[in-house]
Length: 313
Image 1: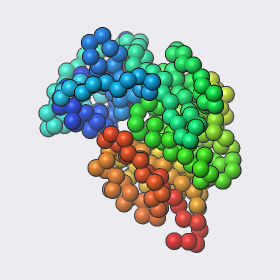
Image 2: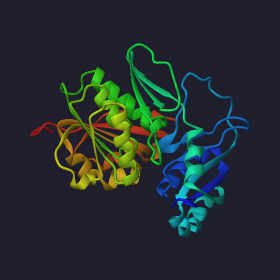
Image 3: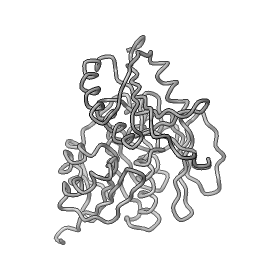
Image 4: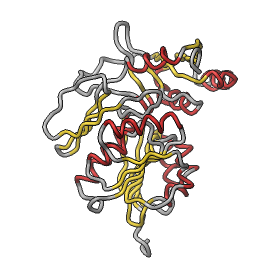
């Protein structure tokens, strides 16, 4: 896919269903979704790849209409009819065009900005490699080049994971020098953050071979010893003090036996990528784990679950 490798989908419709439509486009195969901004402004990456500059002022009231751009490989063109019908049921329309790989990647870069996530005075700063953002005292800096992969740290789902990770470390909810597993690691943000926060071992699992290469490069760039593998979580070995999975709710439910099995007794599991109305059904898919904390941001939720110690209830 070097000359006409991507189909660009432009979807427009009611802003109230923007997040649900973003999730549907990602479920259809888009590695991320770009939300268009006003004239003369850079767009924002949404779903699992949005960056936000937290130093900017909040925008004014949002329009009742939204416009999103998503991307599918040319080999997925046959799926456009199903996508069109699914979005049409919630009042959205779409148009398509073809892009070369280079055009596609440049469109994403325009929307990437640094993001900071803080808890009790400790901050993780995630920034793209081509953007300079001044480091503040005590910040843990992660530089990411998403390349042709996504998971860059700025969407609410990922920020909640980072906030949960910070809380668990700072409030000493984990043993000293714990182990971390990131399922669906994308560009490796969470696994790199774990190493920066003192984890003994960090492993990232990713079924997308392109993302595996990107995550390995980002780990090397940040001098973080992260093992990145394309092994499915069902076949991965070992247990971990902390497991995180920032993927779609349907996958969280399907993978619940495997994800639960990767958590050590007494350990914790972070689940994200969940729309608020999906929270209860995801929680029901993990009957052996106890809810320790729930996060919410806009239309998204994240759950922190604890696995009981062996022999306890």
